[in-house]
Image 1 (cartoon, one colour):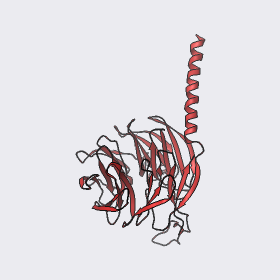
Image 2 (tube, helix red, strand yellow):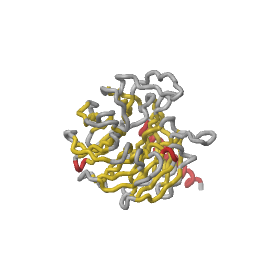
Image 3 (cartoon, helix red, strand yellow):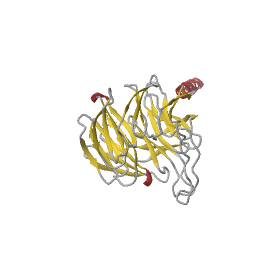
Image 4 (cartoon, rainbow, N blue to C red):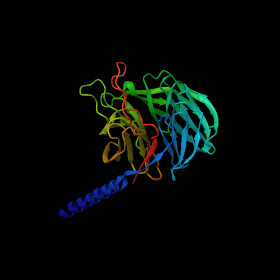
Length: 357
């Protein structure tokens, strides 16, 4: 009677040790490697890494600066933009897509030469942008027009729109099966959009647990959506900042983990089961979580970054994380119109912070 008990204990113990060793190895010793300086003081937003093409795209106000992921050197720029937000790439067509507020367009460029091919007018103030490789569609969400726009990646033509989404559109993610999920930050809702019929399939309320849903990624294998929630809101006490895990079928929040303030980006590494969350509030932090099971998650590491390092890109080949940031200068004097002014970036300090193992 004792032997099966002891054997079972040993088996579970070995499994636990192996799991723990993997978790520690996967995220141990993350630290700042270097800062890559980028000239200019024209602001920034959501950077993206093309792990296969070995390029890092850094929207920088009036341009997109393109870096080599291996050397960190600048290889070129996509110019002629205004208030650039994000970049998605369709490598099979040799095209990149950058959305910008001018007042609202997607610039199509050649991935090799970075030359502009075309500019497509979309809704006012587009923000999030992604590529669905199965549908061959680029999706961008417009904060001004409150709509989703789909662009055929091959032809550059608009394939469809979903109008009147309500609220402030934020990040989006595709399940590769005909659905795009879209956060509505100011109203605390999550849309499940049918992008074959271009209709809203479901709308789920995330509040009060997840207030101000911002960043997003998806685990398509387990049908789980990861959302960075900024917190706050009208509840007392205000909702905390946290990582929320949502069942993509039911819309229910199945797990949460606390994070730092000011979340604005997260990415999921399906191969390693790791979720990287960047928060730019306070001293700045990169939180790394492990997906133990579809409804269970554990914190592996909190890595100090820099104040304002709120967006990020993950190189899925190396596990290196890139965060655009600038040194924080003094805050302007308060005025009746702006009693709590934000500190401004110090001129000449914009760079990409590189964090790795």
